[in-house]
Amino acid sequence: MIESDSLKLYLVRHAKAKKDYENPARPLSEKGVKDAEKLAKFLKEHSITPSVIIHSGILRAKETAEIINKSLSIELAVDKTLGPSFDPFVYADRLKSEIKEDTMMVGHMPYLANLVCLMLTGTPNSFLIEFKTCSVVCLERKGLDDWYLDWMITPKLL
Image (cartoon, rainbow, N blue to C red; front, top):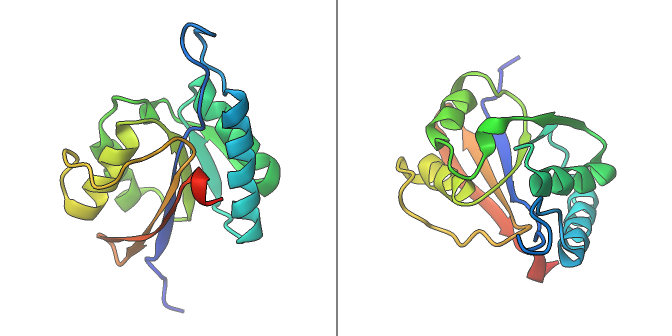
C-alpha cells in the first residue's frame, strides 16, 4: 500500500468576540456564537472531519472551537503557540514532520493570515486574504511541501 502525503489543514479565525470595554476576557458576542454555530453546521453537513481541533487557549478561540466540536465530536487540544503574534514557521515545520492527519486550527490574526501566506508563497509577510472572523480556509498538501488553497468560506456565505 502506498502512503499518501495528502493532508488537509482547516484554519479557522475565531468568531466575533465582545469588545474589550464590554468584557476584558473577550468571550464570543451573540453574533459570534451564531456565526460559529452556522460554521459548525456547514462543516458537519459537508462531512468535514479533521482528526483534531487545536485552539490557542484564548477564550474567544476556545469557545469557537468548542461550538464547532459540538457538531463534529472530535479531539480538542490546546496549543498556546497559536496566539496572535506567534511565529508561523513553528507550525510550518510541524506540518512537515509531526502532523500527519487532517487538522483544524482555531486561532487569531495576524497569525493565521501569516501561516496561510507562508504555506502558499514561502513568506509570512504578505497578506493574500482578508481573514474575517469565523472564516475557514482549507489548505491541502500534496506531496511533502506543496500546499494549495482548496477553498475558503466566510460567515456571509453561510
